[in-house]
Length: 122
Image 1: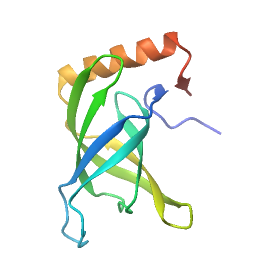
Image 2 (image 1 turned 180 degrees about the vertical axis):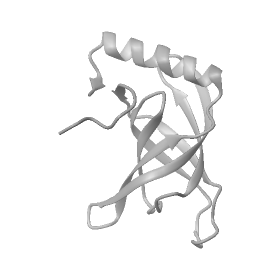
Image 3 (image 1 turned 120 degrees about the vertical axis):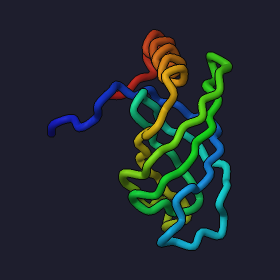
């Protein structure tokens, strides 16, 4: 199967804060919630949450890169989603849409450090 990812991803379990920006079609009870990243690249992240995030939903992500101690804030767009654990937990693939250059540099450094520890995926 051909790899679709644009960039190498690092396995990463970090706490993230998510704010739903685009709520035109869905009426979310929670506009802000804490979540967890599962992996990260310069182009996006896989996150886990307690609520489903429909495809094409825009979210703001605030994440601390643990080993760097740096914070990134970026807009993301949900590209895919799936229910886990009897639809009580969800995973979503998020593409970073408007990520600042500084945040890209932080993520690249963060991934480089993780690769040195062999914590990377595909």
